Image (cartoon, rainbow, N blue to C red; front, side):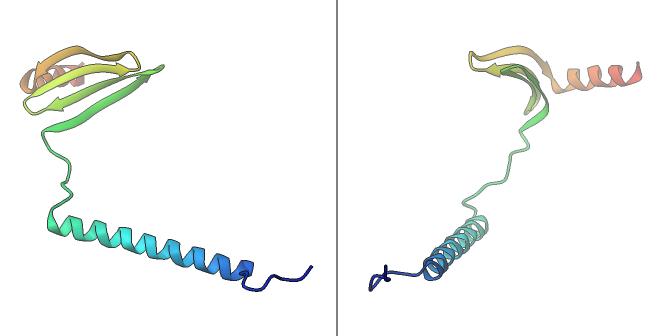
Length: 101
């Protein structure tokens, strides 16, 4: 069976696919770098910080610092439940007592 006229060889096809992927990757990198310079992408906030997390089966236990407060939540398929809430001063006192013992 002969080669059909106008059909691409596998090498030419792969070359075009690789070129397209390189162009897409460069375009994505360029868009991200421009958006960082223009301020379109913001860095993470210091007001919300994950102190700790612990997987518990299908749920996850999180301790989060939210501004001046520390909260503990359990989140999973059944929803999110608040487990505790402390001020940052109370949390630091508890942590220092734990370190001393």
